[in-house]
Amino acid sequence: MTGSLQGRDITIIGAGIGGLTAALALARRGASIIVMEQATALTEIGAGLQISPNAGHVLDALGLGPALDAVSARSDGVVLHDMAGRQVAALPLARRRPGAAFRMVHRARLVEVLADAARAAGVTLRLGARVESLPEAELLIGADGLHSAVRARLNGAEQPFFTGQTAWRGLIVDDQPDTMARVFMGPGQHFVSYRLAGGLRNLVAVQERAAWTAEGWSHEDDPAHLRAAFAGFGGPVPGWLDQVQRVGIWGLFRHDVAARWHDARLAILGDAAHPTLPFMAQGAVMAIEDAWILAACLDAISDQQTALARYQEIRAPRVRRIVAAANGNARNYHLRGPARVIGHAGLRSLSRLSPALLMRRFDWIYDYDPLADTPR
Image (cartoon, rainbow, N blue to C red; front, side):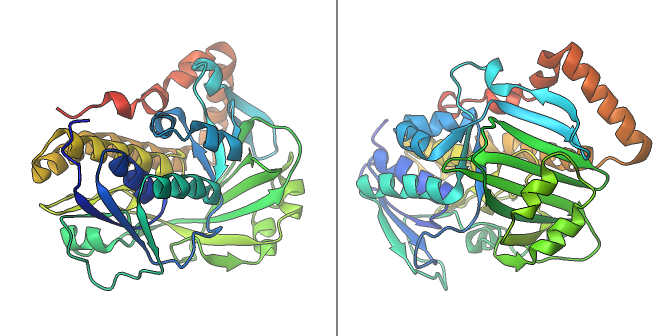
Protein backbone atom coordinates (compact mmCIF):
# COMPACT_ATOMS: atom_id res chain seq x y z
CA MET A 1 0.00 0.00 0.00
CA THR A 2 1.30 3.44 -0.93
CA GLY A 3 -1.23 5.62 0.85
CA SER A 4 -2.62 7.13 -2.37
CA LEU A 5 -6.14 6.16 -1.31
CA GLN A 6 -5.95 7.45 2.23
CA GLY A 7 -9.02 9.60 2.89
CA ARG A 8 -10.22 9.53 -0.75
CA ASP A 9 -14.02 9.71 -1.18
CA ILE A 10 -15.31 7.05 -3.55
CA THR A 11 -18.90 6.15 -4.42
CA ILE A 12 -19.86 2.74 -5.82
CA ILE A 13 -23.18 2.00 -7.50
CA GLY A 14 -24.24 -1.59 -6.89
CA ALA A 15 -23.89 -3.83 -3.82
CA GLY A 16 -23.37 -7.03 -5.74
CA ILE A 17 -20.26 -9.19 -5.60
CA GLY A 18 -18.05 -6.86 -7.64
CA GLY A 19 -19.21 -3.68 -5.92
CA LEU A 20 -18.80 -5.06 -2.41
CA THR A 21 -15.40 -6.59 -3.17
CA ALA A 22 -14.23 -3.25 -4.55
CA ALA A 23 -15.65 -1.42 -1.53
CA LEU A 24 -13.79 -3.70 0.87
CA ALA A 25 -10.51 -3.63 -1.06
CA LEU A 26 -10.59 0.18 -1.32
CA ALA A 27 -11.63 0.72 2.31
CA ARG A 28 -8.82 -1.53 3.52
CA ARG A 29 -6.45 0.83 1.68
CA GLY A 30 -7.82 3.86 3.51
CA ALA A 31 -10.52 5.20 1.18
CA SER A 32 -13.89 6.46 2.43
CA ILE A 33 -16.51 4.39 0.60
CA ILE A 34 -20.24 4.78 0.02
CA VAL A 35 -22.08 1.98 -1.77
CA MET A 36 -25.48 2.83 -3.26
CA GLU A 37 -27.82 -0.11 -3.91
CA GLN A 38 -31.35 0.22 -5.29
CA ALA A 39 -32.62 -2.91 -3.52
CA THR A 40 -34.04 -2.25 -0.07
CA ALA A 41 -32.35 -5.38 1.32
CA LEU A 42 -29.57 -7.75 0.30
CA THR A 43 -31.91 -10.63 -0.50
CA GLU A 44 -31.82 -14.23 -1.74
CA ILE A 45 -31.77 -13.23 -5.44
CA GLY A 46 -29.66 -15.60 -7.52
CA ALA A 47 -28.53 -19.11 -6.85
CA GLY A 48 -25.24 -20.98 -6.93
CA LEU A 49 -21.83 -19.65 -7.95
CA GLN A 50 -18.52 -21.38 -8.57
CA ILE A 51 -15.60 -19.47 -7.05
CA SER A 52 -12.37 -20.80 -8.52
CA PRO A 53 -8.88 -20.24 -7.02
CA ASN A 54 -8.12 -17.18 -9.15
CA ALA A 55 -10.82 -15.26 -7.25
CA GLY A 56 -10.04 -17.17 -4.07
CA HIS A 57 -6.66 -15.42 -3.92
CA VAL A 58 -8.48 -12.09 -3.59
CA LEU A 59 -11.05 -13.27 -1.04
CA ASP A 60 -8.32 -14.90 1.06
CA ALA A 61 -6.18 -11.74 0.88
CA LEU A 62 -9.17 -9.79 2.18
CA GLY A 63 -9.35 -12.15 5.16
CA LEU A 64 -12.59 -13.80 4.06
CA GLY A 65 -11.38 -17.38 3.66
CA PRO A 66 -12.74 -18.78 6.96
CA ALA A 67 -16.11 -16.99 6.63
CA LEU A 68 -16.44 -18.18 3.04
CA ASP A 69 -15.51 -21.75 3.93
CA ALA A 70 -18.29 -21.74 6.53
CA VAL A 71 -20.97 -21.03 3.91
CA SER A 72 -19.61 -22.87 0.86
CA ALA A 73 -18.92 -26.40 -0.32
CA ARG A 74 -15.62 -27.53 -1.79
CA SER A 75 -15.45 -28.93 -5.30
CA ASP A 76 -12.90 -31.41 -6.62
CA GLY A 77 -13.58 -30.61 -10.28
CA VAL A 78 -15.97 -31.21 -13.16
CA VAL A 79 -17.44 -34.33 -14.74
CA LEU A 80 -18.87 -34.17 -18.26
CA HIS A 81 -21.72 -36.57 -19.06
CA ASP A 82 -23.75 -37.27 -22.16
CA MET A 83 -27.50 -36.71 -21.98
CA ALA A 84 -28.08 -40.34 -20.94
CA GLY A 85 -25.90 -39.76 -17.87
CA ARG A 86 -22.83 -41.71 -19.06
CA GLN A 87 -19.48 -40.18 -18.16
CA VAL A 88 -17.64 -38.57 -21.06
CA ALA A 89 -14.69 -36.98 -19.24
CA ALA A 90 -13.53 -36.14 -15.73
CA LEU A 91 -11.52 -33.06 -14.83
CA PRO A 92 -10.22 -33.37 -11.23
CA LEU A 93 -9.16 -29.72 -11.18
CA ALA A 94 -8.45 -29.52 -7.45
CA ARG A 95 -6.08 -32.50 -7.60
CA ARG A 96 -4.02 -30.61 -10.18
CA ARG A 97 -3.48 -27.69 -7.76
CA PRO A 98 -3.28 -29.02 -4.17
CA GLY A 99 -4.27 -26.50 -1.55
CA ALA A 100 -6.24 -24.34 -3.95
CA ALA A 101 -9.93 -23.96 -3.17
CA PHE A 102 -12.74 -24.47 -5.68
CA ARG A 103 -15.75 -23.25 -3.73
CA MET A 104 -19.47 -23.62 -4.52
CA VAL A 105 -21.59 -21.01 -2.75
CA HIS A 106 -25.04 -19.48 -2.87
CA ARG A 107 -24.77 -15.93 -4.18
CA ALA A 108 -26.67 -14.57 -1.19
CA ARG A 109 -24.22 -16.16 1.25
CA LEU A 110 -21.22 -14.64 -0.55
CA VAL A 111 -22.92 -11.23 -0.59
CA GLU A 112 -23.54 -11.51 3.16
CA VAL A 113 -19.88 -12.33 3.84
CA LEU A 114 -18.73 -9.39 1.71
CA ALA A 115 -21.29 -6.96 3.16
CA ASP A 116 -20.41 -7.85 6.76
CA ALA A 117 -16.70 -7.36 6.07
CA ALA A 118 -17.33 -4.09 4.20
CA ARG A 119 -19.36 -2.64 7.07
CA ALA A 120 -16.67 -3.72 9.54
CA ALA A 121 -14.11 -1.86 7.39
CA GLY A 122 -16.16 1.33 7.62
CA VAL A 123 -18.01 1.16 4.30
CA THR A 124 -21.40 2.93 4.24
CA LEU A 125 -24.09 0.83 2.54
CA ARG A 126 -27.11 2.83 1.38
CA LEU A 127 -29.89 0.40 0.52
CA GLY A 128 -33.01 1.51 -1.31
CA ALA A 129 -30.92 4.17 -3.07
CA ARG A 130 -32.25 4.23 -6.63
CA VAL A 131 -29.87 6.25 -8.81
CA GLU A 132 -31.91 8.49 -11.10
CA SER A 133 -28.86 10.44 -12.27
CA LEU A 134 -25.19 9.78 -11.66
CA PRO A 135 -24.08 11.43 -8.42
CA GLU A 136 -21.15 13.81 -8.30
CA ALA A 137 -18.14 12.11 -6.74
CA GLU A 138 -14.37 12.31 -6.83
CA LEU A 139 -14.55 8.77 -8.20
CA LEU A 140 -17.76 6.97 -9.15
CA ILE A 141 -17.49 3.23 -9.80
CA GLY A 142 -20.26 1.50 -11.71
CA ALA A 143 -20.73 -2.04 -10.44
CA ASP A 144 -24.31 -1.79 -11.63
CA GLY A 145 -24.56 -4.85 -13.81
CA LEU A 146 -25.86 -5.61 -17.28
CA HIS A 147 -27.86 -2.41 -17.66
CA SER A 148 -25.21 -0.13 -16.18
CA ALA A 149 -25.94 3.59 -16.22
CA VAL A 150 -22.22 4.27 -15.79
CA ARG A 151 -21.33 2.11 -18.80
CA ALA A 152 -23.95 3.95 -20.85
CA ARG A 153 -22.45 7.30 -19.85
CA LEU A 154 -19.00 6.14 -20.95
CA ASN A 155 -19.95 4.20 -24.08
CA GLY A 156 -23.43 5.25 -25.15
CA ALA A 157 -26.30 2.86 -25.81
CA GLU A 158 -25.56 -0.72 -26.88
CA GLN A 159 -27.55 -3.42 -28.63
CA PRO A 160 -26.89 -6.85 -27.14
CA PHE A 161 -28.20 -9.71 -29.25
CA PHE A 162 -30.16 -12.78 -28.23
CA THR A 163 -28.02 -15.91 -28.60
CA GLY A 164 -31.00 -18.17 -29.25
CA GLN A 165 -30.47 -19.79 -25.84
CA THR A 166 -32.66 -19.66 -22.76
CA ALA A 167 -31.61 -20.75 -19.27
CA TRP A 168 -33.49 -21.97 -16.21
CA ARG A 169 -32.00 -21.73 -12.72
CA GLY A 170 -33.24 -23.37 -9.53
CA LEU A 171 -32.34 -24.96 -6.21
CA ILE A 172 -33.37 -28.28 -4.68
CA VAL A 173 -32.67 -30.01 -1.38
CA ASP A 174 -30.02 -32.73 -1.73
CA ASP A 175 -28.05 -34.26 1.13
CA GLN A 176 -26.18 -36.81 -1.01
CA PRO A 177 -22.40 -36.27 -0.96
CA ASP A 178 -20.96 -35.17 -4.29
CA THR A 179 -17.82 -33.09 -4.69
CA MET A 180 -18.00 -32.66 -8.47
CA ALA A 181 -19.78 -30.15 -10.65
CA ARG A 182 -21.64 -32.12 -13.33
CA VAL A 183 -22.45 -31.12 -16.90
CA PHE A 184 -24.88 -33.20 -18.99
CA MET A 185 -24.54 -32.44 -22.71
CA GLY A 186 -27.27 -32.99 -25.29
CA PRO A 187 -28.01 -31.77 -28.83
CA GLY A 188 -28.83 -28.08 -28.54
CA GLN A 189 -29.03 -28.13 -24.73
CA HIS A 190 -27.11 -28.91 -21.56
CA PHE A 191 -27.71 -29.24 -17.84
CA VAL A 192 -25.33 -28.23 -15.02
CA SER A 193 -25.57 -29.18 -11.36
CA TYR A 194 -23.43 -28.96 -8.24
CA ARG A 195 -23.83 -29.16 -4.48
CA LEU A 196 -23.94 -26.10 -2.24
CA ALA A 197 -23.56 -25.86 1.52
CA GLY A 198 -26.61 -26.46 3.70
CA GLY A 199 -27.89 -29.50 1.83
CA LEU A 200 -28.75 -27.67 -1.39
CA ARG A 201 -28.06 -28.45 -5.03
CA ASN A 202 -27.85 -25.80 -7.74
CA LEU A 203 -29.41 -26.51 -11.14
CA VAL A 204 -28.85 -24.60 -14.40
CA ALA A 205 -30.40 -25.79 -17.65
CA VAL A 206 -29.76 -24.19 -21.04
CA GLN A 207 -31.67 -24.86 -24.24
CA GLU A 208 -31.47 -23.45 -27.75
CA ARG A 209 -34.87 -22.08 -28.74
CA ALA A 210 -36.23 -19.44 -31.06
CA ALA A 211 -38.55 -17.92 -28.45
CA TRP A 212 -37.09 -14.82 -26.82
CA THR A 213 -36.92 -14.61 -23.03
CA ALA A 214 -36.09 -11.37 -21.25
CA GLU A 215 -32.60 -10.89 -19.89
CA GLY A 216 -32.23 -11.04 -16.10
CA TRP A 217 -32.69 -13.50 -13.23
CA SER A 218 -36.04 -12.45 -11.83
CA HIS A 219 -38.48 -14.01 -14.33
CA GLU A 220 -40.33 -17.01 -12.91
CA ASP A 221 -41.41 -19.99 -14.99
CA ASP A 222 -43.48 -23.10 -14.45
CA PRO A 223 -41.18 -25.99 -13.41
CA ALA A 224 -43.22 -28.20 -15.75
CA HIS A 225 -41.73 -26.32 -18.70
CA LEU A 226 -38.22 -27.15 -17.49
CA ARG A 227 -39.10 -30.81 -16.95
CA ALA A 228 -40.61 -31.06 -20.44
CA ALA A 229 -37.57 -29.40 -22.04
CA PHE A 230 -35.17 -31.93 -20.47
CA ALA A 231 -37.43 -35.00 -20.51
CA GLY A 232 -34.93 -36.83 -22.72
CA PHE A 233 -32.09 -36.63 -20.19
CA GLY A 234 -31.14 -39.61 -18.01
CA GLY A 235 -28.92 -40.39 -15.04
CA PRO A 236 -29.78 -38.32 -11.95
CA VAL A 237 -31.33 -35.46 -13.95
CA PRO A 238 -34.98 -36.68 -13.90
CA GLY A 239 -34.87 -37.16 -10.12
CA TRP A 240 -33.45 -33.69 -9.62
CA LEU A 241 -36.05 -32.14 -11.92
CA ASP A 242 -38.88 -33.88 -10.07
CA GLN A 243 -37.89 -31.93 -6.94
CA VAL A 244 -37.94 -28.48 -8.53
CA GLN A 245 -40.68 -26.31 -7.03
CA ARG A 246 -39.61 -22.84 -8.21
CA VAL A 247 -37.50 -21.92 -11.20
CA GLY A 248 -36.27 -18.71 -12.77
CA ILE A 249 -35.80 -18.28 -16.50
CA TRP A 250 -33.83 -15.78 -18.55
CA GLY A 251 -32.60 -15.23 -22.08
CA LEU A 252 -28.89 -15.36 -22.78
CA PHE A 253 -27.62 -12.30 -24.60
CA ARG A 254 -24.16 -11.60 -25.95
CA HIS A 255 -22.66 -8.21 -25.09
CA ASP A 256 -19.46 -6.63 -26.32
CA VAL A 257 -16.73 -5.95 -23.80
CA ALA A 258 -16.99 -2.21 -23.19
CA ALA A 259 -14.59 -0.12 -25.27
CA ARG A 260 -14.20 2.50 -22.50
CA TRP A 261 -13.99 1.44 -18.85
CA HIS A 262 -13.25 4.88 -17.43
CA ASP A 263 -12.83 8.60 -17.84
CA ALA A 264 -11.32 11.04 -15.35
CA ARG A 265 -13.87 10.29 -12.60
CA LEU A 266 -15.92 7.27 -13.73
CA ALA A 267 -15.01 3.58 -13.87
CA ILE A 268 -16.86 0.29 -14.42
CA LEU A 269 -16.23 -3.29 -13.39
CA GLY A 270 -17.78 -6.74 -13.58
CA ASP A 271 -20.88 -7.19 -15.73
CA ALA A 272 -21.01 -3.45 -16.34
CA ALA A 273 -17.71 -3.75 -18.25
CA HIS A 274 -17.78 -7.28 -19.66
CA PRO A 275 -20.95 -9.38 -19.37
CA THR A 276 -20.29 -13.00 -20.24
CA LEU A 277 -22.32 -16.09 -21.02
CA PRO A 278 -22.40 -18.50 -18.04
CA PHE A 279 -20.39 -21.30 -19.66
CA MET A 280 -17.03 -20.90 -17.91
CA ALA A 281 -18.40 -20.11 -14.41
CA GLN A 282 -16.27 -16.96 -14.38
CA GLY A 283 -18.77 -14.08 -14.26
CA ALA A 284 -18.57 -13.40 -10.51
CA VAL A 285 -14.92 -14.43 -10.51
CA MET A 286 -13.99 -11.78 -13.08
CA ALA A 287 -15.79 -9.11 -11.04
CA ILE A 288 -13.74 -10.10 -7.97
CA GLU A 289 -10.52 -9.96 -10.00
CA ASP A 290 -11.53 -6.54 -11.39
CA ALA A 291 -12.19 -5.17 -7.93
CA TRP A 292 -8.75 -6.12 -6.63
CA ILE A 293 -6.86 -4.81 -9.66
CA LEU A 294 -8.83 -1.55 -9.63
CA ALA A 295 -8.03 -0.97 -5.96
CA ALA A 296 -4.37 -1.90 -6.48
CA CYS A 297 -4.02 0.52 -9.41
CA LEU A 298 -5.61 3.39 -7.50
CA ASP A 299 -3.36 2.66 -4.54
CA ALA A 300 -0.15 2.39 -6.58
CA ILE A 301 -0.69 5.30 -8.99
CA SER A 302 -1.55 8.67 -7.47
CA ASP A 303 -2.95 10.23 -10.65
CA GLN A 304 -6.51 8.91 -10.86
CA GLN A 305 -6.96 8.87 -14.63
CA THR A 306 -3.58 7.19 -15.12
CA ALA A 307 -4.54 4.58 -12.52
CA LEU A 308 -7.87 3.90 -14.21
CA ALA A 309 -6.18 3.58 -17.59
CA ARG A 310 -3.74 1.05 -16.13
CA TYR A 311 -6.65 -0.91 -14.61
CA GLN A 312 -8.29 -1.28 -18.04
CA GLU A 313 -4.95 -2.09 -19.66
CA ILE A 314 -4.37 -4.96 -17.22
CA ARG A 315 -7.89 -6.35 -17.22
CA ALA A 316 -9.22 -6.02 -20.78
CA PRO A 317 -7.07 -8.70 -22.48
CA ARG A 318 -7.88 -11.31 -19.85
CA VAL A 319 -11.63 -10.71 -19.77
CA ARG A 320 -11.83 -10.71 -23.59
CA ARG A 321 -10.19 -14.13 -23.60
CA ILE A 322 -12.56 -15.48 -20.95
CA VAL A 323 -15.63 -14.12 -22.74
CA ALA A 324 -14.42 -15.81 -25.94
CA ALA A 325 -13.87 -19.10 -24.08
CA ALA A 326 -17.40 -18.96 -22.67
CA ASN A 327 -18.79 -18.37 -26.15
CA GLY A 328 -16.85 -21.43 -27.35
CA ASN A 329 -18.20 -23.64 -24.57
CA ALA A 330 -21.74 -22.70 -25.57
CA ARG A 331 -21.06 -24.44 -28.90
CA ASN A 332 -19.12 -27.38 -27.47
CA TYR A 333 -21.83 -28.39 -24.99
CA HIS A 334 -24.55 -28.43 -27.68
CA LEU A 335 -22.97 -30.47 -30.48
CA ARG A 336 -25.33 -32.40 -32.75
CA GLY A 337 -25.08 -35.39 -35.05
CA PRO A 338 -21.65 -36.65 -36.15
CA ALA A 339 -19.87 -33.70 -34.54
CA ARG A 340 -21.31 -34.74 -31.19
CA VAL A 341 -20.26 -38.39 -31.60
CA ILE A 342 -16.73 -37.42 -32.65
CA GLY A 343 -16.39 -34.72 -29.98
CA HIS A 344 -17.52 -36.96 -27.14
CA ALA A 345 -15.29 -39.82 -28.33
CA GLY A 346 -12.31 -37.48 -28.39
CA LEU A 347 -13.04 -36.25 -24.87
CA ARG A 348 -13.38 -39.83 -23.57
CA SER A 349 -10.04 -40.81 -25.06
CA LEU A 350 -8.24 -37.73 -23.82
CA SER A 351 -9.72 -38.06 -20.33
CA ARG A 352 -8.60 -41.70 -20.14
CA LEU A 353 -5.18 -41.44 -21.79
CA SER A 354 -4.00 -37.94 -20.89
CA PRO A 355 -6.20 -36.21 -18.31
CA ALA A 356 -3.42 -33.72 -17.49
CA LEU A 357 -3.37 -32.55 -21.10
CA LEU A 358 -7.15 -32.04 -21.02
CA MET A 359 -7.01 -30.03 -17.79
CA ARG A 360 -4.00 -27.97 -18.92
CA ARG A 361 -6.31 -26.08 -21.24
CA PHE A 362 -7.74 -24.31 -18.19
CA ASP A 363 -4.51 -23.45 -16.37
CA TRP A 364 -4.53 -19.88 -17.70
CA ILE A 365 -7.86 -19.32 -15.97
CA TYR A 366 -7.44 -21.04 -12.62
CA ASP A 367 -3.74 -20.43 -11.99
CA TYR A 368 -3.95 -16.69 -12.51
CA ASP A 369 -3.22 -14.71 -9.34
CA PRO A 370 -4.57 -11.14 -9.31
CA LEU A 371 -2.30 -10.33 -6.37
CA ALA A 372 0.73 -10.96 -8.56
CA ASP A 373 -0.58 -8.83 -11.44
CA THR A 374 0.60 -5.64 -9.78
CA PRO A 375 0.31 -2.27 -11.54
CA ARG A 376 3.51 -0.61 -12.65
